[in-house]
Length: 229
Ligand code: Z5A
Image (cartoon, rainbow, N blue to C red; front, side, top):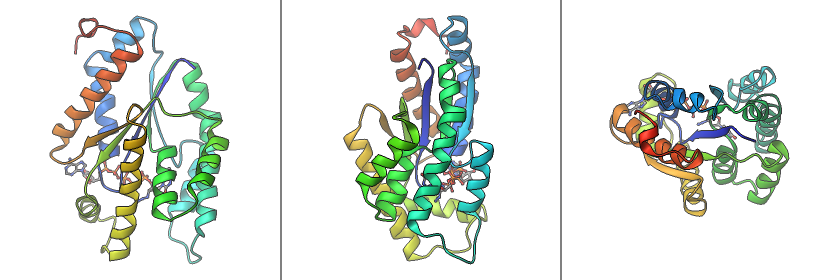
Protein backbone atom coordinates (compact mmCIF):
# COMPACT_ATOMS: atom_id res chain seq x y z
CA UNK A 1 0.00 0.00 0.00
CA UNK A 2 1.70 3.20 -1.10
CA UNK A 3 -0.79 5.96 -0.24
CA UNK A 4 -1.31 7.35 3.25
CA UNK A 5 -4.39 7.35 5.45
CA UNK A 6 -4.76 10.38 7.75
CA UNK A 7 -7.75 10.34 10.11
CA UNK A 8 -9.32 13.16 12.14
CA UNK A 9 -10.95 12.14 15.42
CA UNK A 10 -12.51 13.75 18.46
CA UNK A 11 -15.62 14.23 20.55
CA UNK A 12 -18.65 16.08 19.21
CA UNK A 13 -18.06 19.69 18.19
CA UNK A 14 -14.26 19.42 18.46
CA UNK A 15 -13.94 20.97 14.99
CA UNK A 16 -12.60 18.00 13.05
CA UNK A 17 -14.79 18.53 9.97
CA UNK A 18 -13.77 22.21 9.86
CA UNK A 19 -10.10 21.30 10.28
CA UNK A 20 -10.18 18.49 7.73
CA UNK A 21 -11.26 21.02 5.10
CA UNK A 22 -8.62 23.52 6.30
CA UNK A 23 -5.95 20.82 6.04
CA UNK A 24 -7.04 20.07 2.50
CA UNK A 25 -6.68 23.74 1.57
CA UNK A 26 -3.31 23.96 3.30
CA UNK A 27 -1.96 20.85 1.56
CA UNK A 28 -2.89 22.41 -1.78
CA UNK A 29 -1.78 25.97 -1.05
CA UNK A 30 1.42 25.23 0.88
CA UNK A 31 2.62 23.27 -2.15
CA UNK A 32 2.89 20.06 -0.15
CA UNK A 33 0.53 18.26 -2.51
CA UNK A 34 1.97 19.63 -5.78
CA UNK A 35 5.48 18.74 -4.60
CA UNK A 36 4.49 15.19 -3.67
CA UNK A 37 2.74 14.86 -7.03
CA UNK A 38 5.70 16.23 -9.00
CA UNK A 39 8.00 13.75 -7.29
CA UNK A 40 5.58 10.95 -8.19
CA UNK A 41 5.04 10.12 -4.52
CA UNK A 42 1.31 10.87 -4.32
CA UNK A 43 -1.31 10.75 -7.07
CA UNK A 44 -3.93 13.00 -5.51
CA UNK A 45 -5.75 14.02 -2.34
CA UNK A 46 -9.20 12.63 -1.47
CA UNK A 47 -11.56 13.28 1.43
CA UNK A 48 -13.96 10.80 2.97
CA UNK A 49 -15.75 9.99 6.21
CA UNK A 50 -17.27 7.32 8.44
CA UNK A 51 -20.02 6.52 8.61
CA UNK A 52 -21.11 7.32 5.07
CA UNK A 53 -18.07 7.09 2.76
CA UNK A 54 -19.82 4.81 0.22
CA UNK A 55 -23.29 4.45 -1.30
CA UNK A 56 -24.09 1.66 1.14
CA UNK A 57 -22.55 3.75 3.92
CA UNK A 58 -24.84 6.71 3.21
CA UNK A 59 -27.80 4.44 3.92
CA UNK A 60 -26.15 3.05 7.06
CA UNK A 61 -25.37 6.60 8.23
CA UNK A 62 -29.05 7.49 7.90
CA UNK A 63 -30.03 4.40 9.89
CA UNK A 64 -27.52 5.26 12.61
CA UNK A 65 -28.03 9.00 12.96
CA UNK A 66 -31.72 9.65 12.16
CA UNK A 67 -34.02 9.70 15.17
CA UNK A 68 -36.08 6.50 15.35
CA UNK A 69 -38.98 5.38 17.55
CA UNK A 70 -37.21 2.12 18.27
CA UNK A 71 -33.85 2.77 19.97
CA UNK A 72 -30.92 1.01 18.30
CA UNK A 73 -29.40 -1.58 20.60
CA UNK A 74 -25.72 -0.99 21.43
CA UNK A 75 -24.59 -4.20 19.73
CA UNK A 76 -26.68 -3.46 16.64
CA UNK A 77 -25.07 -0.01 16.54
CA UNK A 78 -21.60 -1.56 16.78
CA UNK A 79 -22.33 -3.95 13.90
CA UNK A 80 -23.73 -1.16 11.71
CA UNK A 81 -20.52 0.88 12.17
CA UNK A 82 -18.53 -2.27 11.33
CA UNK A 83 -20.59 -2.91 8.19
CA UNK A 84 -20.12 0.69 7.07
CA UNK A 85 -16.36 0.34 7.66
CA UNK A 86 -15.97 -2.98 5.82
CA UNK A 87 -17.61 -1.51 2.73
CA UNK A 88 -15.62 1.72 3.02
CA UNK A 89 -12.30 -0.10 3.35
CA UNK A 90 -12.90 -2.40 0.38
CA UNK A 91 -14.66 0.00 -1.96
CA UNK A 92 -12.94 3.28 -1.17
CA UNK A 93 -9.93 3.24 1.17
CA UNK A 94 -7.92 0.30 -0.17
CA UNK A 95 -8.43 1.17 -3.86
CA UNK A 96 -7.35 4.78 -3.24
CA UNK A 97 -4.38 3.85 -1.06
CA UNK A 98 -3.27 1.24 -3.61
CA UNK A 99 -3.33 4.01 -6.23
CA UNK A 100 -1.07 6.26 -4.13
CA UNK A 101 -3.66 8.69 -2.83
CA UNK A 102 -3.36 10.81 0.27
CA UNK A 103 -6.66 10.11 2.05
CA UNK A 104 -8.11 12.46 4.70
CA UNK A 105 -10.85 10.64 6.60
CA UNK A 106 -13.34 12.06 9.13
CA UNK A 107 -13.44 9.30 11.83
CA UNK A 108 -12.31 5.65 11.57
CA UNK A 109 -11.59 2.66 13.85
CA UNK A 110 -10.61 4.73 16.89
CA UNK A 111 -14.13 6.23 17.02
CA UNK A 112 -15.52 2.72 17.58
CA UNK A 113 -13.07 2.12 20.41
CA UNK A 114 -13.92 5.47 22.01
CA UNK A 115 -17.71 5.59 21.41
CA UNK A 116 -18.83 1.96 21.49
CA UNK A 117 -16.03 0.77 23.80
CA UNK A 118 -15.50 3.54 26.32
CA UNK A 119 -18.79 5.37 25.75
CA UNK A 120 -21.23 2.45 25.61
CA UNK A 121 -19.09 0.04 27.62
CA UNK A 122 -18.95 -2.74 25.02
CA UNK A 123 -16.13 -5.27 25.22
CA UNK A 124 -12.88 -3.75 23.93
CA UNK A 125 -11.42 -7.08 22.81
CA UNK A 126 -14.52 -7.77 20.77
CA UNK A 127 -14.27 -4.28 19.24
CA UNK A 128 -10.62 -4.87 18.29
CA UNK A 129 -11.59 -8.15 16.62
CA UNK A 130 -14.45 -6.49 14.77
CA UNK A 131 -12.20 -3.64 13.63
CA UNK A 132 -9.73 -6.22 12.33
CA UNK A 133 -12.46 -8.05 10.42
CA UNK A 134 -13.88 -4.82 8.97
CA UNK A 135 -10.50 -3.39 7.94
CA UNK A 136 -8.43 -6.52 7.22
CA UNK A 137 -5.87 -4.79 9.46
CA UNK A 138 -5.80 -1.48 7.62
CA UNK A 139 -4.70 0.98 10.29
CA UNK A 140 -4.43 4.73 9.84
CA UNK A 141 -0.92 5.99 9.16
CA UNK A 142 -1.69 8.99 11.33
CA UNK A 143 -4.68 9.92 13.47
CA UNK A 144 -5.07 13.50 14.62
CA UNK A 145 -7.14 13.66 17.80
CA UNK A 146 -8.62 17.12 18.26
CA UNK A 147 -8.88 17.23 22.00
CA UNK A 148 -11.46 19.62 23.40
CA UNK A 149 -13.31 19.64 26.71
CA UNK A 150 -16.72 18.09 26.24
CA UNK A 151 -18.69 21.10 27.50
CA UNK A 152 -17.18 23.43 24.90
CA UNK A 153 -17.77 20.95 22.08
CA UNK A 154 -21.39 20.35 23.00
CA UNK A 155 -21.98 24.09 23.43
CA UNK A 156 -20.68 24.64 19.88
CA UNK A 157 -23.14 22.05 18.58
CA UNK A 158 -25.91 23.74 20.55
CA UNK A 159 -25.02 27.07 18.98
CA UNK A 160 -25.19 25.44 15.57
CA UNK A 161 -28.73 24.31 16.48
CA UNK A 162 -27.84 20.61 16.38
CA UNK A 163 -28.91 20.08 20.00
CA UNK A 164 -31.71 21.63 22.06
CA UNK A 165 -30.27 20.91 25.47
CA UNK A 166 -27.43 19.02 27.02
CA UNK A 167 -28.26 16.44 29.65
CA UNK A 168 -25.93 15.05 32.32
CA UNK A 169 -26.09 11.62 30.64
CA UNK A 170 -24.72 13.21 27.46
CA UNK A 171 -21.89 14.84 29.39
CA UNK A 172 -20.95 11.60 31.15
CA UNK A 173 -21.06 9.63 27.90
CA UNK A 174 -18.87 12.13 26.05
CA UNK A 175 -16.44 12.31 28.99
CA UNK A 176 -15.97 8.55 28.73
CA UNK A 177 -15.46 8.88 24.96
CA UNK A 178 -12.80 11.51 25.58
CA UNK A 179 -11.09 9.18 28.08
CA UNK A 180 -11.08 6.53 25.35
CA UNK A 181 -9.25 8.86 22.97
CA UNK A 182 -6.84 9.83 25.77
CA UNK A 183 -6.05 6.16 26.33
CA UNK A 184 -5.31 5.68 22.63
CA UNK A 185 -2.97 8.68 22.67
CA UNK A 186 -1.08 7.12 25.57
CA UNK A 187 -0.83 3.63 24.13
CA UNK A 188 -0.11 4.51 20.49
CA UNK A 189 1.81 7.82 20.60
CA UNK A 190 3.37 7.37 17.14
CA UNK A 191 0.10 6.89 15.26
CA UNK A 192 -2.46 8.69 17.44
CA UNK A 193 -1.47 12.31 18.05
CA UNK A 194 -3.23 14.61 20.48
CA UNK A 195 -3.76 18.16 19.25
CA UNK A 196 -5.15 20.90 21.48
CA UNK A 197 -8.45 21.95 19.85
CA UNK A 198 -8.96 25.05 22.03
CA UNK A 199 -8.59 28.50 20.54
CA UNK A 200 -9.44 29.91 17.15
CA UNK A 201 -9.82 27.82 14.00
CA UNK A 202 -6.56 29.34 12.74
CA UNK A 203 -4.63 28.43 15.89
CA UNK A 204 -5.85 24.84 15.74
CA UNK A 205 -5.09 24.66 12.01
CA UNK A 206 -1.49 25.73 12.62
CA UNK A 207 -1.03 23.00 15.24
CA UNK A 208 -2.33 20.41 12.79
CA UNK A 209 -0.12 21.72 9.99
CA UNK A 210 2.92 21.20 12.16
CA UNK A 211 1.93 17.56 12.84
CA UNK A 212 1.21 16.97 9.15
CA UNK A 213 4.53 18.52 8.04
CA UNK A 214 6.41 16.30 10.46
CA UNK A 215 4.68 13.11 9.28
CA UNK A 216 4.90 13.91 5.57
CA UNK A 217 8.60 14.73 5.87
CA UNK A 218 9.23 11.40 7.62
CA UNK A 219 7.08 9.24 5.37
CA UNK A 220 8.45 10.60 2.12
CA UNK A 221 11.98 11.19 3.31
CA UNK A 222 11.91 14.84 2.28
CA UNK A 223 14.03 17.67 3.60
CA UNK A 224 12.13 20.82 4.60
CA UNK A 225 13.69 22.78 1.70
CA UNK A 226 12.07 20.32 -0.72
CA UNK A 227 8.70 21.89 0.03
CA UNK A 228 8.00 25.58 -0.40
CA UNK A 229 5.49 25.90 2.47
N1 Z5A B 1 -19.50 7.21 15.59
C1 Z5A B 1 -19.47 6.14 16.46
O1 Z5A B 1 -20.14 6.15 17.49
N2 Z5A B 1 -18.69 5.08 16.16
C2 Z5A B 1 -17.94 5.01 15.04
O2 Z5A B 1 -17.25 4.01 14.80
C3 Z5A B 1 -17.98 6.14 14.14
C4 Z5A B 1 -18.78 7.21 14.45
C5 Z5A B 1 -17.16 6.11 12.89
C6 Z5A B 1 -21.37 10.89 13.60
O3 Z5A B 1 -20.10 11.37 13.46
C7 Z5A B 1 -21.52 10.10 14.88
O4 Z5A B 1 -21.01 8.79 14.69
C8 Z5A B 1 -20.75 10.68 16.04
C9 Z5A B 1 -19.78 9.56 16.46
C10 Z5A B 1 -20.40 8.34 15.89
N3 Z5A B 1 -21.70 10.88 17.11
N4 Z5A B 1 -21.48 11.65 18.01
N5 Z5A B 1 -21.42 12.31 18.87
P1 Z5A B 1 -19.84 12.75 12.74
O5 Z5A B 1 -18.38 12.93 12.75
O6 Z5A B 1 -20.52 12.76 11.45
O7 Z5A B 1 -20.62 13.83 13.67
P2 Z5A B 1 -20.12 14.70 14.87
O8 Z5A B 1 -19.18 14.04 15.79
O9 Z5A B 1 -21.33 15.21 15.49
O10 Z5A B 1 -19.22 15.77 14.15
P3 Z5A B 1 -19.61 17.06 13.40
O11 Z5A B 1 -21.02 17.49 13.49
O12 Z5A B 1 -19.11 16.85 12.01
O13 Z5A B 1 -18.76 18.08 14.27
P4 Z5A B 1 -17.16 18.27 14.33
O14 Z5A B 1 -16.56 17.66 13.14
O15 Z5A B 1 -16.64 17.80 15.61
O16 Z5A B 1 -17.00 19.80 14.34
P5 Z5A B 1 -17.25 20.89 13.18
O17 Z5A B 1 -18.48 20.52 12.36
O18 Z5A B 1 -16.01 21.15 12.47
O19 Z5A B 1 -17.53 22.12 14.13
C11 Z5A B 1 -18.65 22.15 14.99
C12 Z5A B 1 -19.09 23.63 15.18
O20 Z5A B 1 -18.05 24.34 15.87
C13 Z5A B 1 -19.30 24.39 13.86
O21 Z5A B 1 -20.35 25.27 14.04
C14 Z5A B 1 -17.98 25.12 13.65
O22 Z5A B 1 -18.14 26.29 12.90
C15 Z5A B 1 -17.58 25.43 15.08
N6 Z5A B 1 -16.11 25.47 15.27
C16 Z5A B 1 -15.17 24.69 14.70
N7 Z5A B 1 -13.94 25.02 15.12
C17 Z5A B 1 -14.11 26.05 16.00
C18 Z5A B 1 -13.20 26.82 16.80
N8 Z5A B 1 -11.87 26.61 16.80
N9 Z5A B 1 -13.73 27.75 17.61
C19 Z5A B 1 -15.07 27.98 17.65
N10 Z5A B 1 -15.97 27.29 16.91
C20 Z5A B 1 -15.50 26.33 16.10
